[in-house]
Amino acid sequence: MSGIVFYNTRSRSKEPFEPIEPGHVRIYSCGPTVYAPQHLGNLRPYLFADILKRTLLESDYRVTHVINITDVGHLTDDADAGEDKMEKAAAKTGRQAAEIAAEYTEQWLEDRRRLGCLEPEVLCKATEHIEEQIALGLRLEEKGFTYRTSDGIYYDVSRFSAYADFAGLALSAQSDGGRIEEVAEKRNPADFAIWKFAAEGVKRQQEWDSPWGRGFPGWHLECSAMSSKYLGEHFDIHTGGIDHVPVHHTNEIAQSEGAFARTPWVNYWLHNEFIDFKGQKMSKSKGSVLLLQDLVDAGYEPMAYRYWFLQAHYRQQQSFTDDAIAAAAKGYRRLVAHAAELRAVPGPGDPERQAPLRARFRAAMHDDLNAPQAMAVAWEVARSGELPDPDKRDLLLHFDRILALGLASAAPEAAAESDPRIDALVLEREAARKGRDFATADRIRDELAAEGVVITDTPEGPTWKRE
Ligand code: AMP
Ligand code: ZN
Image (tube, rainbow, N blue to C red; front, side, top):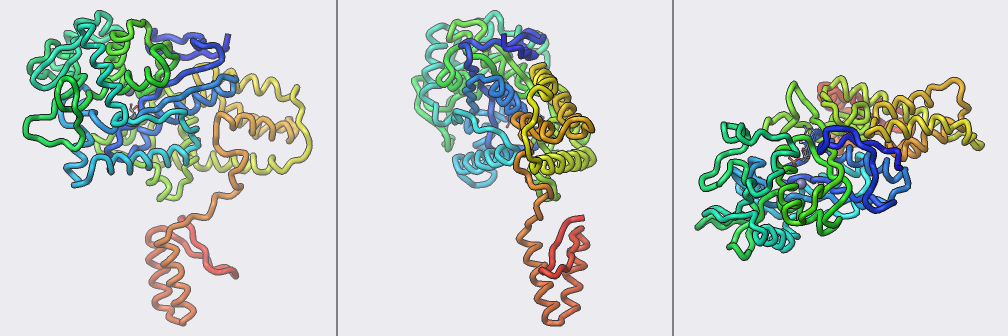
């Protein structure tokens, strides 16, 4: 037995974890829709998948982690109504959808790196798997799960008797003004698109030929098609945000269990709760979002965000506030300061003395990834007045293989900030001072002070920092 327990959305309970293939865990995580930058809320699913993967790796499993990039087919309503998010962004900006997708994919990858997330074994794009999606659509058609409307090929949810089970849906409630929009010609309100036809006379940037006609795949199809390509038709863990339970994941299950005739298709479903901001879910559509770069621009290190994330369980809602991130940044810096001091300590630790603390840290992570509890163990070690320094050092570095806060390498002091605009103004002030133009030098100093930037003159030249 692995000793690991996960809360499985499918059973609504904690279950002991066992992979299908001994020693090897296959994970699929629903990835970003790359029509806009990913905000701090969107990053939670990947931080959570990262501590999941690291916990499994620390238990000596080999892990194959697949993340997809949604670059076509995700409509403004998850249940296949409205416009394609990518095409809409392209029309609004006058840019190519592919160019927008490339830009935001790169930004998201960069944010993941800055947050210490391990690279997935496979990163797959929907637009590069059109053939696989069509093949899966054909399999569903052969088995009688689909029907044709003037708008596309739809999945008939009444043909999959377990449709409502995963999310505990009350299907009758959905037709009474629930979140799934009524589309003319649909047999059931919850029916969803496998393939959408390109509208008559409208040239989409992203459209392909298919046996049904020219068009594009429905959003849900890509996850069933790509997960089965890379992980097989039965795999261990599927992750995503909690909002995916009633529509996206319910539809993925209907497609995959329908086509592959395998129940359950995925053994463990893990979902993260939302990050709230100003009293509601942080969301692009609600307009109240912050990016990781916004935190960096405000003077925070990206790792302060990872530290903040680790302070709550992934299944708890977490409220993002200025005070909370400021406190996390301080906590992170204090922990790094402890680690940096300990890194210099010579001599071996005593594995026997460390064993109970290692076991408590592991037990916390094995209990459905209880990161806050694991962090408490890390702090107990850092603060301990009893543990010898070499043991503290070994333990913190060992814990950091999962926490991934950079405790083995982060500089004891936060790196000096860099901002080319401020650097240039500081240099301009210095030149003015040297030219004895004190009026200009003072004006620049005052302008920077007004935005909270303080210049200090040192024998090596001026430095600056944000207050
Ligand atoms: P999207 O790019 O909109 O498809 O979202 C990417 C992922 O972020 C999905 O798994 C969503 O469930 C998740 N997500 C979106 N908003 C939040 C939030 N405020 N807190 C946590 N996860 C979120
Ligand atoms: Zn998905």
